[in-house]
Image (cartoon, rainbow, N blue to C red; front, side):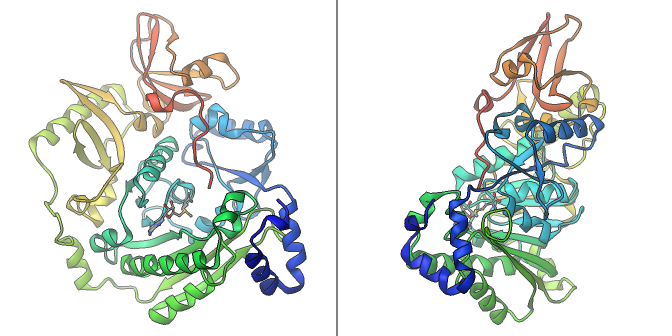
Length: 466
Ligand code: SAM
């Protein structure tokens, strides 16, 4: 991309902002954009999977990203998004600078965390990995279609402590006042830092668009403030260079909410680091004690659509049926959590949901994924859900069938084909590639019937780049 293709008003702004450095900055548009992937440590706990990660390093010639221990650069012609390890959730394709935000937020296992603008899921999957699957992550995306992609990525990476919602920040703040230890707000922005990666973003840019983005960021921040616990931290990030959307929004925020303290902020510049443009600010809310008022407000819900926990007999029966099935088929799986039934889909909310929140708070909210989808209830039988397979380790299942990444079988499997297997294999079988689960098969009479959801068949590159 050459400087001539950038909006003139944008180039003028950047020259004013950077002074003598501007030439070096504008020269960065003549250099190829950087590409990266981040290993998903939720999948890399067993020695099997560590071997797969090491194999990936040499397969794609990966080089480490300095600010993210799990992040690596790759160069074309490598296409890691097309590899079976991608389908298995071993890594997430993510722009390297974007990896800085969750690192700065540093969520801890056991915390209650919100990712407020989450699709397609780069930061959510990073946060969940740092939480080591413990605690509760609510991952929200306002646009329902994007929320579906987010849910797909959450499932592919095997997140079991994550609820995907699709609400407005206002709908969420009504339900979850002073709830979260940490909040990630990766705000919608004018995208100046992405012009090299996405030249179309440059065409949409205008000073008016920047002002509109800043107004929207301010609105979302106010809801984030409501939801942050006293003593909690908020990461505000954008992929723009514009001060109006970065420093100025943050200054307005700390001026209006004096209990919000700016701890640090950082910018990633394409002429100084190997990555696209990014801004992240970390803020802390003063105070450490949850007020009695906020506690009681939350425990009684927002008053909107609250029906309380559903303990009806259909749900109880369904969960008992699943537990009986899992006792035989998944001897290594701890069936802990809060069960929820949506139609014929059975979900398991993280155990910690019960400690912090209650199920009635989800009423009236679009919830594409109410925790881990564990099963479909068919007439008097259980069919394990694809998401459950993706959250398991092969040793947790009574039966497993492993393939190697270089073989023809895995590609046939990902296209949705059934496979010939030894006749003694019978029943639900966890199918994996080099020890990484890719779904369920049902073995009978020497055939492994493919239960990969139709929408995931054929190695499509998941839309997880941002
Ligand atoms: N965090 C994501 C990731 O790492 O993959 C990228 C998020 S993207 C920068 C910003 C998101 O904000 C978009 O998915 C967009 O749909 C969403 N968004 C747009 N308008 C919004 C609004 N008014 N409130 C909340 N989110 C909004």
